[in-house]
Picture: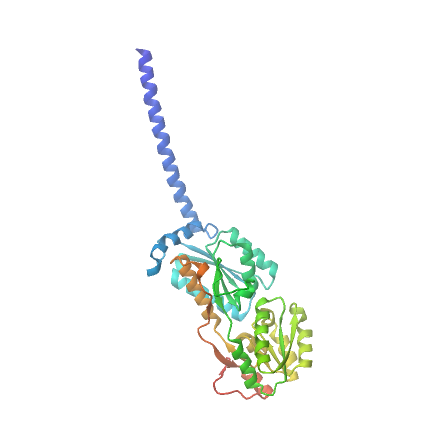
Length: 362
């Protein structure tokens, strides 16, 4: 009898132990899941659950999604260098994100590479290691570094003149077919060339000056050259490998040309004082690719608003993360408005008469 009772007691204890183990595992999984979700919401480096939340919201993407309660999206911004135009694009992006996601639903980390390619690569790889939900790459080198760092995390470029050239896509159709899209700062180049003819009607030879390390600048130079060829205007290209060569390159250009064209170019834009100190005393007018460059050394530009293209990139970020938009099919967007603008001080100094449809750069 004792043996029977012992056997019965052993079975009861075994059953209780098995039940207890099963309950413990279930509780442990719930706790771990809750903890992981909490860490992901609180930390910029653990972004995985916010991406999952975005996928949940994507079910109603056609109608426009809303941010799920408690979801925090971690967005990283890699800005190529400090420059007025790029600063405005970043500001527009941040303000769009805060308005659309809501202040408490998005963390935005901005890092500046100070114009160094090595810094761009390091920052991009750090963002990828942190598993952020989305990266904004502000500037061509920034975009190229982010593209090299990940083909999984969505990347939006801004202040990019030509995505096809920047990404080395020969048959560019408007969408990359990859994890990259964004907004372009390209203003119609044929219209820029028309401004040169309008403001400097007696021009005989144009120097096209840009940094050879910037793919977007090379693209603009090529397109501007085509427009000059169509109008029978002679030209020559002058390239600087970096900022150290700008003075000698510009000096060589003004010795052979009676006007210059400088496209949207971050290296040139960061050294407008050097350029102007050479060109203005020599009486050489410059058509500039963008407004901030023109403010420093140009007579006129076909201007876009960098805040607007940054803001548009913020809208695209919301569409991707909350509405579930497929970035691989998203067409690159362009500035909605372009405007003829001129540098009043330089035009006066060079004796250039400006038509009434131009607006003064403030």
